[in-house]
Image 1 (cartoon, rainbow, N blue to C red):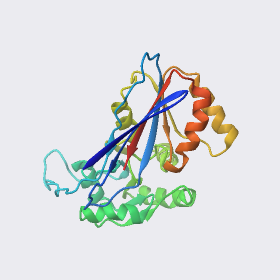
Image 2 (image 1 turned 180 degrees about the vertical axis):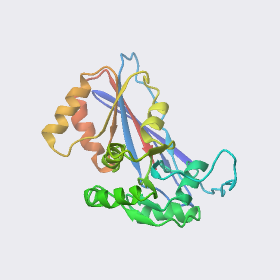
Image 3 (image 1 turned 90 degrees about the vertical axis):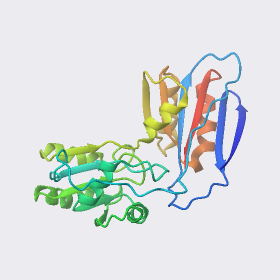
Image 4 (image 1 turned 45 degrees about the vertical axis):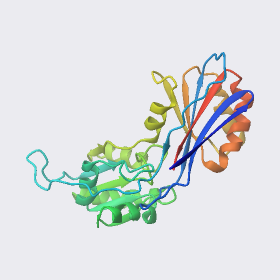
Length: 263
């Protein structure tokens, strides 16, 4: 794998960017995600930071899953929130695979995208689309299935569902209806990016995606610029230039930005 590092000084902020090129993938490639992490500091020299790059593995071995275990009986009915790989197909737990295989149905943000993951691991559980455009229509149907004792899994395209992705409202409804909600720990872009940023991790604010509405977006950036704690943003690749232009006017020359790319 060839690596290229690009270091750019854009007053009044320092941007460090690393990207991977000429990668060979034999497993499905997941959609790219960019995460901006910002923190205040008082530098004497321009700082060079490491950009974490997550790429799909060239070969992913089939996991060995025990079918019988005294510690793991049949799954209990309920809503299971399962984290899926951010960019590398190996970034999924054995427990997550067992839950995906055992479920009655898997709610998926994009069934075509999630289908690649399921086919890779020979999982034949039915998929049902569940995204921001239809979640309000799907909720009651899903609640009925849960009340009938089914095992329902919710996944997003990448990472942990319900975090800047569909699912938070469904989890809330299940809690209100006393339906078990079981989180299956796994990949989370926020935590992965923060751990590799080199910035303060004691206190941070997760902002997520900024508003498409200009005034609301600038209001949120202004609030973040006035906070000393680390700020975490989700920024789509096509909005990166816009983010730099707007944030550079507000954050000042003592603010550092780390760009974390998941590809």
